[in-house]
Image (cartoon, rainbow, N blue to C red; front, side, top):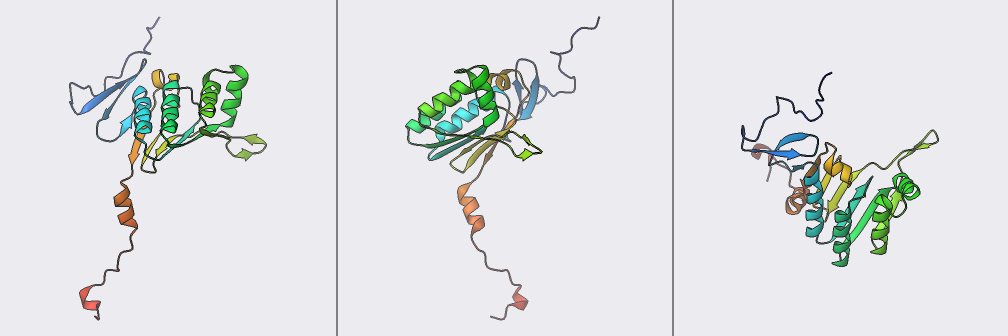
Length: 196
């Protein structure tokens, strides 16, 4: 009988000792290596980044999430609301209804109740209807002050944090640079064609 290869890692992965510029991201079953300079967060690191950005918000926080069961992120959103930030959360309607039926007061239903009690704006949406079947809202996105965005594959759940191979990318928008790029610029006229 062959032994399990579930916890073994491929030989072609680059290891930290081979290249000090690489960081090892681990969860309980897998490991992945990513360079440190491009804003990519995996598994538990993604949840930490969510909490960090929520805490740094100055005005607005927008969350779109399919499955949201992470109490620490919910508490960060509630704290931000108490500090006067506008917090909007969009959850998948089907996922919320399923959790409410299967385990009322737990999981997604618990998070929903916490957010509503804190007077956070929470809406349920679905995907598009096609041939009598309704799709899901499958986004996993955080937008802070219209300047920072986390987008990726991870739900805000224990499974995403500890078991799945997930990725979350941090995109920063430099507001002055964006505004400068929007300013009208005079047309460039070659000197030989300029009649002034």
